[in-house]
Image (cartoon, rainbow, N blue to C red; front, top):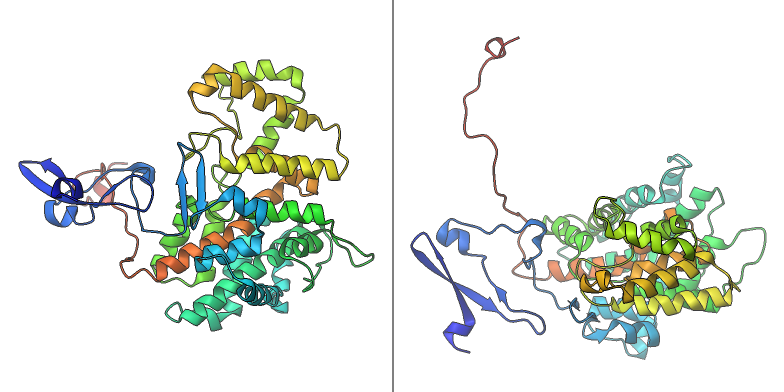
Length: 433
């Protein structure tokens, strides 16, 4: 590689700065500006960090223009169709798919960490019955460091691993308890003989007074939903986990920070918003009028579940989610679902309408996930909780990678200050009445 190819030149105020250019395994080149301020007393302005790489990572790669999502090099559709969530967890965390012995060991470690400390169950009684489950999740997950302080030394690799196993294992239990408390039913304890997804469904929908058998097709659908949401590169919540972790905060606090960020409607609440939109449309006959309102900039009506901050092509997760939705509806005998009819027709219209095609507004994973989760029996208030449960493995894998990166520094974004210039203090008696 020539010098011209390995560096970029920035001319500013009569000075020229040579900025190193880094090449990743995939994706665009990256101009390294880390020393720009030290050398030139100037820094860049990038609201939302849309053109800034905050870290190096080997975990997830996204090509939004081509609709590609890879976990450690493996396409998301191959993982969802051929593997399961436990295998995906191992892949994200350790970097490779497990062999048979590794799989058994890892699954055993996760399965035997699913119970939470019994005293933690008392936390739930302190919340109002109508508390949002995400509020409960933030509080309870953050409190894990008070119960599992024997795995909060981030400088000890073994403690990092134990803490990681604990959050992957215990989040389904905490999420199910949040759900049960929300609907006024008794908690159901985890079962070691069940798979990860089946165990979660059992804890959510079983009751002590009768036997509950998990439908394997629904468990497979739940498992696939977890895989599709496991990691998504440096999104807002993942960046939050990394930023919190850069200060040396314990892993449980970092995951709680990620959950809090995910709670935002612009991030984790998109599937709920898409389902609400389908309900407001009501019937297929109302779609043409709705489409016209979406095109009218003065109407403030948005097409939810279409388009993505990263993807400028069809979200690769959406096709799998669509298939999963059909499998769940078929298994439960839902033949006439007005919302599904609206979703199908809305997707058809949008994919063939020049207005949406030119703007690359393709269906994303949230478009069909809301229908699927509702059919499985979850209220909309639980949608983001399920997202957080699935994303936990991505967060903890990103956190681990950050901790082990020797170049990692505490996060400290710059700002462009436009406030008042320096001024002298005036006593209150001279400020007027």
